[in-house]
Amino acid sequence: MFTEKTYASFYRYEIFSWYTALFEIETTGMTSTNRITLRLPKNTLEELKKEADEKDLPLSSLVIRILNKNVSFERQFGSIKTILLSEVMFEEILDNMDQATIEKVAKMGPKIVRKLCTLSRWKYDIDSIIDNYFTTLAKYCGWFKFKHHVDHSNYHLVFETRLGNKWAKFLLIYVRSILESMKIRVDHESLDDDVISFKFVKR
Image (cartoon, rainbow, N blue to C red):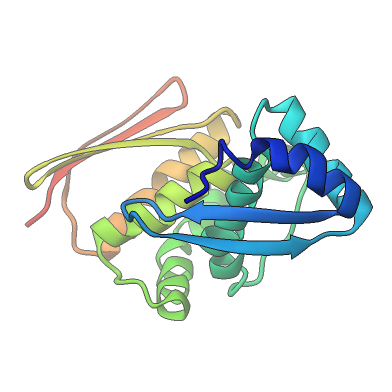
């Protein structure tokens, strides 16, 4: 059975001559692999090769990462209407919002997440939201960095953002609204230097 490492030399020779890529993808937690062959346009392949070299990754690892993002993020979050917005424009919009408007928009969180759960067939409970929503936003959206710790029924969620104090306040209300919509009683919450923390017991 070939592995990613044994295919490395194949990539260097075959791909850039014939523009055909043969990948062996191993699913996390499983021993079986699926081998697929992709024929890519020359310019696409050259861009992938360049990015893989810049990130010091095997080409297969980069392609798998891109496919994972498509499956876990773009296909799921694409089910609700979204737009791309530059960070500068986003900050300008946020800076011109008063506190009442920030709170009104932030409290739309449960409605948005419920719709996403329905379309994606996720459970609307805290474990599902952590795995499918908060973790995915942290990985691909740039909203925040996210860490969490679960000890039996004790939960500790930590969100760290670099988008300023107004955004941090928005995020605090946004997450709190989602938790409250699931009938979770937050025992402790804090906002300190753009780091937001929630502690609660799952009952």
